[in-house]
Length: 196
Image (cartoon, rainbow, N blue to C red; front, side, top):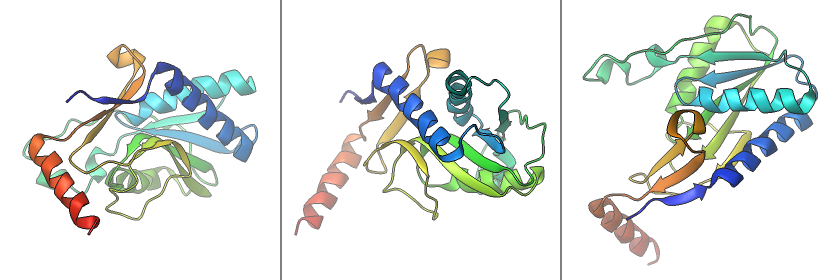
């Protein structure tokens, strides 16, 4: 089966603009706020947010950083091959700042948990909020919830959500890829059982 488009390029752009306006509504001119993108895919959203926020509020100097969580993941020692870490670029302390942690997709919550652990090396924030483009809300394994969500997606675990970026993939869009045949059959069985 072909993937289903969740956000096309127009909706994609509008969603990012809406998220920026929500941040401004809650945080004003964003002084005292740090936008931190999680490597590798969260930074693509964070960079886009930074550009759009600077355009809207007319100020370039936003506290912005990029955070690698490779060695903070709980599956780090269980991988068959050595992971290749990305760069961390945070050149300011997080002490007393209101941090907005940014990732593209919230799924199990384990990536965000690792991000929270990694943040501690840069100070003690006054608060940490989570912003995601896509929230797969029925797949959580740890109790983490986003304050800012571009779109909620209800999907089964075997389905896959992919966020594509103009910068790296040639087009801004979000796709839902169907599960393999066995996964779809299992999903139908679960749905049938829940209807009983």
